[in-house]
Image (cartoon, rainbow, N blue to C red; front, side, top):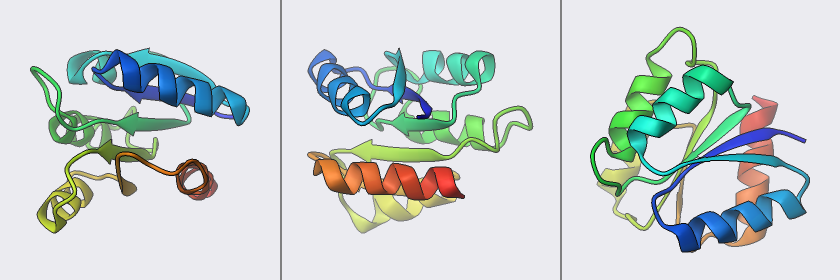
Length: 121
């Protein structure tokens, strides 16, 4: 079981991801935007972060960059989960430090397999 920080501004997505993650034995903490995500990552040091991209204020790419470039949080794998599905988005997400990039809607098996691979290092 892992402690997962879900950074997502859509309450519908938060409910769906939380239910799926808990069903698979994970603990879930949520943040509604990039700024909260960075703050909660630094405070709680989760095992993994699921990061949306399109959010008001600090977007997911910016938040991922802050988390992966900070000595206190750079060990935490960040999996971007976004509706953005262009190759340039994937490349940019990886350049910001993301471990993986998934496109919504994500099939449950793919999400859980990606989380397990990221946690395994």
